[in-house]
Length: 596
Image 1 (cartoon, one colour):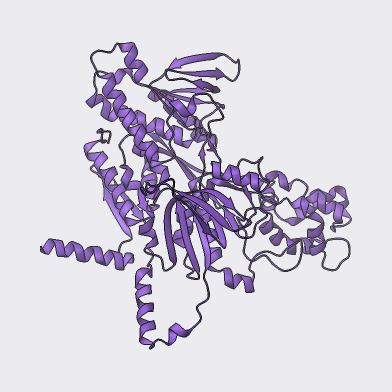
Image 2 (cartoon, rainbow, N blue to C red; image 1 turned 180 degrees about the vertical axis):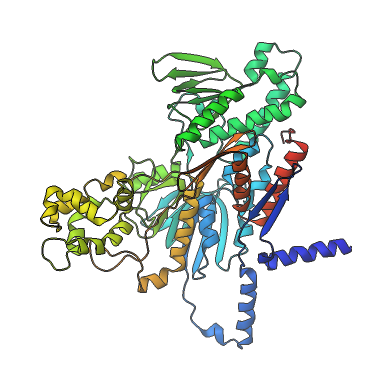
């Protein structure tokens, strides 16, 4: 009983004072150590509501006579990275928030490949949304439903419940909104390849990872049956991964480790019949990484016996074979397989496709937003994460207005000083300018002016409108779409929450850059993505890490960095403890091969 009381008090202390728990130290049996640090935040939560109620009651009822302003309704679609980040960072109690999502939990998607082979349990990377809601001092409700239609003219969304309520017909309802935030993510892009939906596995959700895990275990169990020939066993144990991006590469590495660390002990009769094939349509795997990482990954997979086929395009899949076409010579071939994982990219969900048609964006692959994450043409609808893309405005579209604003003395020419004074505002509004100066290694504005004027720079350093256009004519070539990653979605959610937290203040005192078209300033600074690095686990306790500043590290030390970062990035101490304990369990006991 004393032990029970001790743990109950300890649990209460961690909940009430989360700053007590900031560091987890995990020591493995090999003597190595992992330090995962995460800043814990103190939430006002339900305690704030209770205190407010007590204060109101003690006022003798006078507070009840005050007119309470009606809260604006904010509807959030989705509980993925963007939605979770927005929810965790929102702390403005003047909004009534309603979350609509077909799943009532958040998934730490970077660890989905670890779930497929039993390195991490599915429940360890899922955090119930209501656990996040209860800590917020904001009026928030949740509906487990799927949004099927958006009506921007009437400010409504139409939803369908995803759980069986035992009522006649499908449970449908409408929700009004003042602000709508679309963060529904994306679905797998099959590129209309025949047979993909019917015969392939995907890796976007927890259910996908659990299905793959069950299929992998069942494949080894089936191949161990005595009635099968070696040819049949080889077919069953041929695992094909389509797509050489981070997800495909990490799954191939996890599967290879599972075979070499666990299967050799548990299924010794079939261990030599396993084959892993990775198909990539381009010239290299991990194209978004540094070439040093790409080359190392391809060489390592070759040494590990993973068959990497580059320039191989999938043309069709039936229940027994996968058909491919070589990109160079057009040669076609068909190969028997036991399981196929399709991991080739993403496309818009049906809701987004329909909404884009409504608003005239039907020819796009994602919802177009401005630099403040507002859907183009709407001031009260925002889109972020994988379902959206920022349509960065081009400098050349506003070049005349920029020149006019910079020419403060209305002389018709810009001095170097006038250009320099405007450059910071230009770089904030048009980030491609800063990228251009960096990539072209321009030390300062004088170098840009000299390039634009050529020999005429010897006589005068002033720019007319045509020379100004020439100086900035190539900067729009630096425009790039942001990658569809968890890191981007997480930063966008945090940015938008901060905007809503300061909405009233910035309405009165705008803090953004000046409007080159029109007067005054924008309310907020535009969203800027800050790349913090990326990892590519390659198996054998080796990971490739690419960090800002052209810093590349490959090997066992990067694997410990991977453990530390992914532990610290968990959204709660509950999931952090579960994930770290799963890693420890795997080190000590091996992977779970039960398939459940």
